[in-house]
Image (cartoon, rainbow, N blue to C red):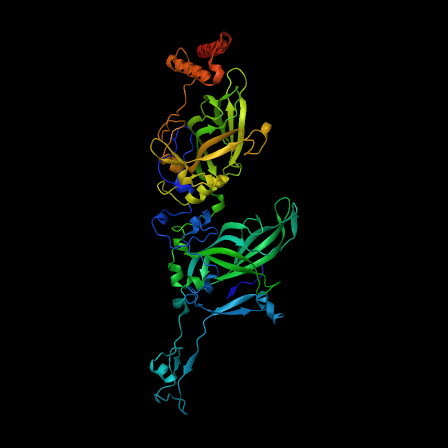
Length: 598
């Protein structure tokens, strides 16, 4: 007798991270994915269909993909109904007469489980002897449904015998593991509370087996994700086998104590039907199932929500060899590396007459200090500011303290005065990190891991990413985007008030993939970036005299090139202009020399 009342843009290739230096955190990828056994990547997926809402692999699917999913209780599926033929007859127990027939399941206080067999006595004579053999007493014979007639059954000679129930249902000490994933489609009920004008629920699961009870953590949600494992050790089968799982809404004191609860719904699983089903025991990865949560006291037979779970029963002697699966999907983090390549700027607002000395600053908010490119001097409005400059960050996803926002600023550099802000913007990267996390969780080999790029479509641009790429010296392709930036002083309409356009590539990958595919900072190798095709830049006249000479010649040519029409007919007063320009260039060179000495 078992008590059990009803109460209580991806790519693969070169382009990874720098070498691990002193002070870097070195993580073992296998430890990160402890929920994934090593043989998972060697065995083919048993579940061919990716049963996620958008049809794409997500973290939950990657962790549980080996466990075939059913959308109803396992005992009701066509695959398992016949295999789960009840091992015992079940007779519910009641205290007194049933007061409400519709709610009879709620009134049950337990169940008697037994095997009942009926045997037919062979015909006998008036003397009480067997008709077939008057010299012996009549015998009892077993009759089964496949027998065409009673005489045929007697001919098969299946005489009555006392079955040894201990041989048919051998006793075993087991450990029961219930992997409760999440509740969904839950009917709003329990304590009717509000927070910020919206309903609030504090729900948890309670699992009972015989006189043992366990509870999950409380989750603040109407449709909570639990990812919790209930373990019942030292359970004897046959024995108490009605596993009762209840979803409860809790009233919690400020100190964290549960003051009272209200039942949302309950589901019951018969453990003996599964343990004595050899096909179920042979399943290496037990199937997932969805069970209805029913509150028999309030609405008999009406589902109040659904609970996704899978169940495993392990012989106590083998429990240590078969550790509990880690299903804490929500608690996992993946070390990642973010790489940003600044290619060019265009339509940059001038801050020094008609040019600007441009450099770019990028900051992943909450992860260290801003990182900057070098400076491209003398960038005109309609000319490209050329950089080909790689910046990198290390972080984890998910991380509670990070919003995964990148602040990008375009600056005008000044030697003697403060630098001037040209434009700025904030790019949200959380979707990119999440995509990388979901694509790579469960993969232990860097060869199987994927890069994820920000594509033009992520920016709302109707452009094919394959047609908008740049390459490094190893010919690895980087999809790029154009990002229009504004300045608060000139308005926030990116189309009308744009102060600069930035061409950049944003790439996210697991740290294991980055270590396997290193790339240097700035333009350094590996995955070296080409030198930008900038015109001559200011240089130290002593240390880099040739570059300084080229810059002076280029600047004078630029000055005369801007003169048109009558400006080309020079008068003595007009010649003062280029002379002043040369003087200013010499002054600039002397200033650079002074800075070099300092």
